[in-house]
Amino acid sequence: MKAIEVVGTIEEGRRVRLDEPLPPGVAGRVRLIILVGEDEPSDRDWLRAAAQGGAFDFLNAPEEDRYTLRDGKPFNDAR
Image 1 (cartoon, rainbow, N blue to C red):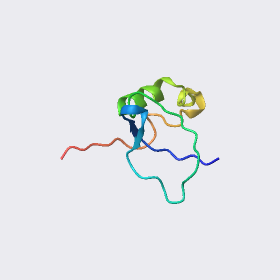
Image 2 (image 1 turned 135 degrees about the vertical axis):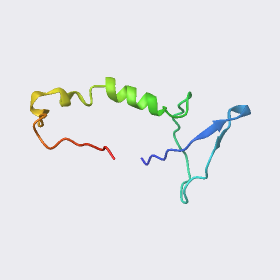
Image 3 (image 1 turned 30 degrees about the vertical axis):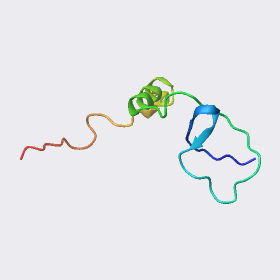
Image 4 (image 1 turned 135 degrees about the horizontal axis):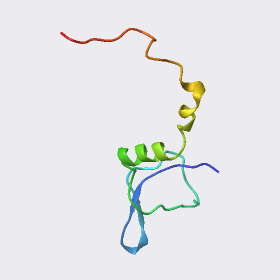
């Protein structure tokens, strides 16, 4: 089964109108999964999910502390 993601609007009479045409060669019966709600998560929603979701928890591991204040040279951008 091939999946194609498209966005559209449910109009009167429960007809679905797609925002863009389907690719050439797409025909026949389909199975639709309709997600109703807000379009896309905002940048703030993505950042909140990344911060709370645990995807970056590995950065708290002691072996990830690779640098100290003694590494490198101070940067002074006084012009």
